[in-house]
Image (cartoon, rainbow, N blue to C red):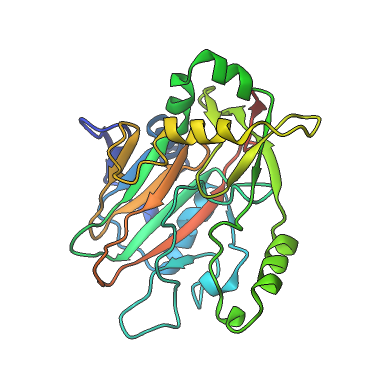
Length: 293
């Protein structure tokens, strides 16, 4: 197994020669260490069956099965299916993740590792955007860092909830009420220390964050969240902000990233073109939030 940092990129490394079938405990430990070091890994020349993709997830930690069944692979519910096959609407959900987010931030116990395995790769405009929120926090002015440390941030999926087939013809207020019941808002540390790297992470996303709160419940002015999102690059609709990294991929690539440190956003082709990816999400060996900042 060989790991090479992506030359000239903001983050990431390419891993060649990794084979799950022959991977030792030392190989898996090295893979995870590289993941935390580089944030984002692209494993080349992977040709895995769905059950093998699930096995890789289990080798890295404990798999989190997504709470909405409509995203599940028909034979392996551990796999979240993004996108559909041409002529087959029974597997997957189209146009997912078209907004900045960290996976499962709206749940009480998010996971540390996300893996995606493209199955149908579009010919053009393929890839995923990423922002390193440790780097963003390090570059904030001291006045803003001091204001955010010790606060909480509200997370909820309600801004971009995907309408399900069972929601058709239902009154919208019923759907909204169910969202609030199944996934009520959660409050996480705005800033926490990464349990492996020791860096301070700013846990804020355009999709799921709804404002900062003091421990006593006092809400901070909404302008502070707006400023943080602007400084991070998440409000840049042209994707030219220097914090934004576009990771492309091709057939046989498998992507792993640090779901604590990175927010991401899917790149969708404006023209109709088949695209589908499998996703497995994993709790690693560490508490997600480490120590609150």
